[in-house]
Image (cartoon, rainbow, N blue to C red; front, side, top):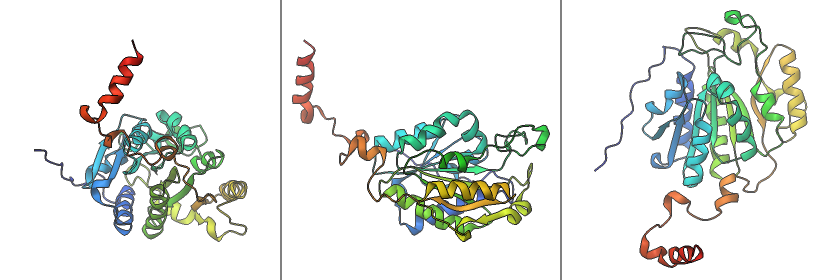
Length: 288
């Protein structure tokens, strides 16, 4: 007899932007009527990486910077599952950068949420890959994940949200999860999630965020246009939020579809001896 682990109270500081992500994930999953037994959340390292502990779903605490590799593994093992990976900007854009880049190319139908607070909050506020110049002595320009994502020619869903806009975030996460569940591929959502203890940017970001859908020429199916709009918005000192890329293709482009097709996947395969005896004997015969 097995006993499932129960959710524990969040360990986050009061006002942390990650609370918004937690609420939006729960609401989006409920709106889409995703059974809890079919939802898997792979958490990363840092404050945001504990998010799976606060939901009564299947959770996996991944290795530092490796949550995408493990999330893709879960999806390929059982394509029927809805898989969400969630971590921070330090976890995803520093040690996890290699997996981040390849996730777009692989295009497995998982949702990756990065809670970006521009600092390493859990380890007391050091500069992260997205920190602004001058923050805690940082001299490097910040990494722009959205521009990087738009530069990779793959049929991915790409968006940015803000924890100060929970309704907008929920709507985008719903669309991203629907995209995944249709087997269309990888969905990346970066959430601006302020760290109220070491880098409280709520007021600043609320003044700077700009919904790209309100800009002239907005077309999320046109990658070149969206790259230009996001670049120009950044150059104007604003922060673009909203859906940045919505692929035109309506086919099933997910990695799991290409590799496994209509099969159940390894985790649900029938491995009983009697059912596979002929195949085993043929395999053994080929080795003699």
